[in-house]
Length: 234
Image (cartoon, rainbow, N blue to C red; front, side, top):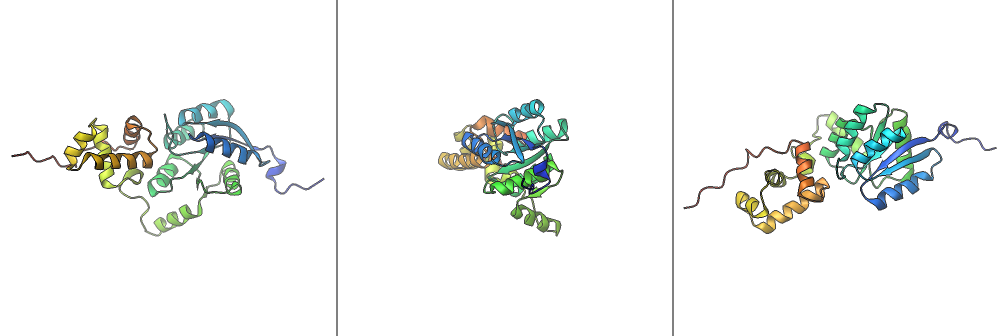
């Protein structure tokens, strides 16, 4: 009889829920992690609300959570899961490693933060660490946190990694302005506004304006008092 390679292999597998809105990514992770004997994938879901329901139904030890998803994003879902199920840990797995995403995830209660170029072994170690109540972060994230602890900057002033102009455009979207109205307010062309909106959607994981508005309101990006009024013509 072979000797188990670790104490974990002699124990019950770690029960996890995978939450990612991209079906191919979600199913790929399920197959990849399902090959690890120490991991049992009990549910795969496509948004934050479904992740919360899966936690209540399946009682996992860890949720492997994407950040930008419909209905309820990974930050909000993490915060809710940690509040309602304090014994359940969350590991973020995302393509976004900007300072804002890192800080928001950790503040919401995530115990791990990895980017999607992590290997099967790295994800497995992060899940095992989280199940044991230990934090594990992507090496690049660790470096930035250490730099911040030494007095360096961590979080930029622009929530979600948006530029100042993109934040202005997002605020005006929240106010219900059309592309033409935004262009008039900001003294730019409609084509420029469309470019900004496409970048906002990409950075926030929004599929449409409604999702972008939800993202903005969840992060307090609603104040437009600092956008100057267009001077009267004539």
